[in-house]
Image (cartoon, rainbow, N blue to C red; front, side, top):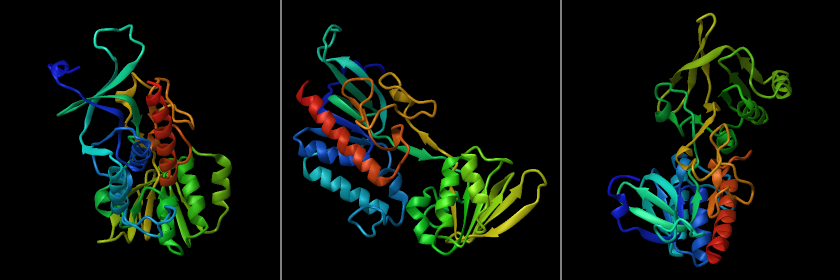
Amino acid sequence: MGENENTKAAESFDLIIIGGGTAGLTAALYAARAGVSVLVLESGSIGGQIAVSPEVENYPGIPKISGAELGMLLKKQAESFGAIVRLESVKYVENVPEIEGDEACGRMLKRVATRRHLYTSKALILATGAANRRLGVAREQELTGSGVSYCAVCDGAFFRGKDVAVVGGGNTALDDASYLADICSKVYLIHRRDEFRGNPETAEKLSAKPQVEMVMSSQVTELLGSPVLTGISVENRVTGEVRQIPVSALFVAVGQQPQNEMFRSLVDLTPGGYIAAGEDCMTRTPGVFAAGDCRDKKVRQLTTAASDGAVAALAAADYIRSF
């Protein structure tokens, strides 16, 4: 605990949700409708990662919407039922006895500190998402949403019938290339090593597809085009040869980085840093739940994040009623 923080007056809620993406805001909506007092803390953009997407067309019931608009709609809907959403960065979280100084007390509150405030709650939902790893190539951020994407399932349909590239060597990259090969005219699969880390059978099937070209021992060194992507420069790491490949999209599949280290005292983390929680979204600590991309799971989509949010909120509401 930081100096003098034990003297701050803590603001109390039934439930605190860390993360204002699809999972967190859905959880806020469900919990608020269940009569629970809810605080959502978001350190970045309302809506989470999807906020930077110019178009979303795979969210049920909404044919087309921008990610930023979807995030604001989710926020307004949660707020309409009484949830409070604040833009604050969390410094630490901890379990504390309901009665300060009484360590024998069986009921533990969750204390959450931000730069400006101290909060307590009966239950906590961690919905911090996971950041996509970047390539680190110049203009990558500038062209994100304008040809550079981190989700083939989300954005692949926008490039139907066009030439695209996927960069990465794991199962996600292989699966993305397989998906895109069915809808795009050409798929370049670029990997910096001479063999893939993903499933060998998937890689073998991909190599047999005439519309897929494997570009091995290579890395993307430059993004071409403005204001939208028109191609990439690729350097062979063995020969040094540089090749320019015209593409309409580059799908980056080099992994994700969950932001869960500060919660290690409350939850178990997988070797990849994801929170160990089942489909019930419960963690090892009573009253602490995990929802969305921060949770250890196979599929990470808007719909699965919303599903997690609903499950975690209803479980948290049950826990709060028994507190």
